[in-house]
Length: 458
Image (cartoon, rainbow, N blue to C red; front, top):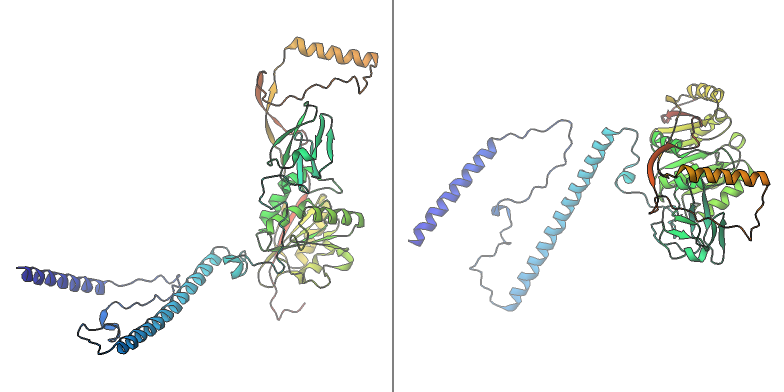
């Protein structure tokens, strides 16, 4: 009875297999002409394709232990050889799959993607830094020597270096640096007299723009973000900046290109160069700790060559009084492998007109002119006070001015700084515009450069 059941089972399995194979042979495989698929790995699907010595017959009887040993060695060698062969085929298939992925990605964004290696994996720096920049380091606790941002109000933001034994003073009280060491970033620190408080924040390019000492007109955050978007700056790229100035644009570019990228920054003014050099070292964005190479030279007369450095860039940002005088000097430093972009930052329309004329003359295309108007709306809480209390305060101030009353520092009574939203007071949610609205900061001129063929003659 059991033998009959096995025979019936074998018959239906064989029949099902033959019918499935017949159906599969009738199905035609349609391949899209736009896709370049790698050849599939052909795996053995029938036992008949395997070598006969791989499958040992049950009738094989070894006469001695040595025969068993030799047979085992032979099978081990065969398995090792087959494994190496199929490993090579798998590696080849993976490589072809990556090439196909690259080709499809480049079709979606021609001229934007960089080399294949940078697309798959960021290029490691030639001189890897041992210490990350404080602007990019992932840390949550304040340590001695850190650059931190002191936030008092939206209009009062200050950078300081934490040094044990030093004290930060303002109108609300004193704050010892040693009290800040060990606190998490974002902590609220009370003053020594308990009247005021401040917040300690981790530095970012956006906060640095608010806090840095202005040596020249700076590029504000809304302009920086738009410039980086139009120049299509990404990690691993090399960017040129002509006109370091106060250095806030340099900090933003350093974060954008990352540790695998490079920023060449040029400053012709000696004092501004020294100040920027000290700040870049302090903030650890200067090479070799960071991606920035700062050069003291006038690009109008000396060009962009740097001794013992190859200056080949993918994007450029000009913050110069006369950018049209150096456009032609920049062309030899553009990448020969992809299209490059340039942005000129000019406050006057006369500068823009001359710049546009020279960009057209030297063969730039896709020329655009933009102007950014920015207004920030702030959500705040304001305290509702009784009208009689406000009137009494006004009369007190007027009386003091009339009597020219002067208070001694010793007898000065500090009024405790009230935290916005503090419980026990009558607060109301309001929205208002920022005090200093930046209507016009500059005109932003953008253009694109295509690499010239090797046999091109000027």
